[in-house]
Length: 140
Image (tube, rainbow, N blue to C red):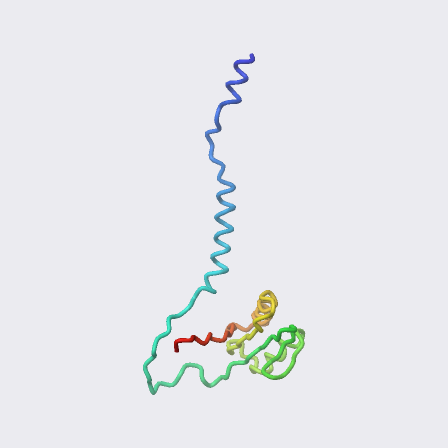
C-alpha cells in the first residue's frame, strides 16, 4: 500500500484552473474602461479659417470651479455642494444638454473633482467636461 499511495500523490493535475485568469481579465477590462476616455489627446494642428457659424455658440458654458480648500464656485458665486444642482438647473434654464466645464485646482484631490463631476451627471446634465491649462512650451 505504501507504493500505491506515493504514485497517487505524484500524479499531476491535468485540469486548468481558469478562475484566476478570468479575475485578471476582468480587472484589466475595468482598468481599460476607466482609463481609455482619459487617454484621448489631440495633435496640434493649424485649423483653416472659415465663415461658418460655430456649433452651439448660443449657449455660453457654465463653469464650476473647485478651489484648493475644496470650496465650490459657479462662475464667481460660491455655492455649497447641496445647492450645486439646483443652481446649475437655474443657470441652464433646466437644459440638461447645457455645457458644463469643471475646473479643479491642481493641488486638490482628484477624487474630489470626480465626486463633483459625478454629482453633476447624477443631476441629469450630459455635457460635463474637465478644463485644464495648456502648458507653455519654451520653444514657442
